[in-house]
Image (cartoon, rainbow, N blue to C red; front, side):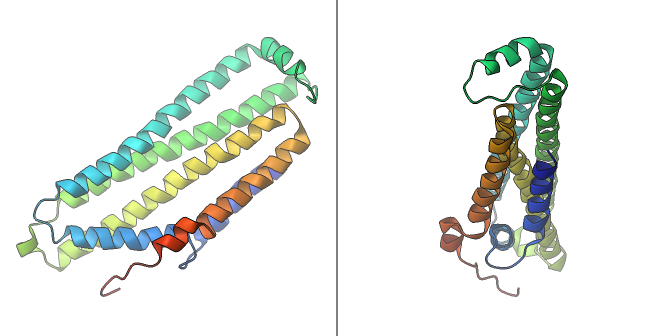
Length: 219
């Protein structure tokens, strides 16, 4: 468990603080700035509202799913004997005490509660983005104050993406924690594998190369 928490929190801290063109979060922040600057030029901003609405829907889906997972894990706590009996029939499974079993389930509950809070906070961020987009004046009346609002909206949108990423990382690490019910060494190995997968996707993926670096005038 100590290794799991160190890996999860350590990688999350390093990934969130990383900057530069070789980081997916940094590149997407530049694209958000570009998007919201272009928003100032549009007479009809329904497209921008729809983009934020679609993003909110996907985040809300994961928040709802986290609640279902938490409810299922609470049910597993109440049916400990039956669940332990089922796992005992699987090959290569290490037998554990009831106390350790409860600890494993509680670890998963903590992981998905964390994910739920991150997803719901991201939904609230998107609500604030909608308000900022709605507060900008028509293109012919846009001034420096409106440009500043667009910059603030980009910062909030990036923070929203950061919270969403943290919730998704919790899902990845939660799936790795499931293996603890089978083998502790498998649990450690899958935790390392999750870190490698996340690192490749956020820092070395083909998607990052395809996105490139957007050109933002005045940046």
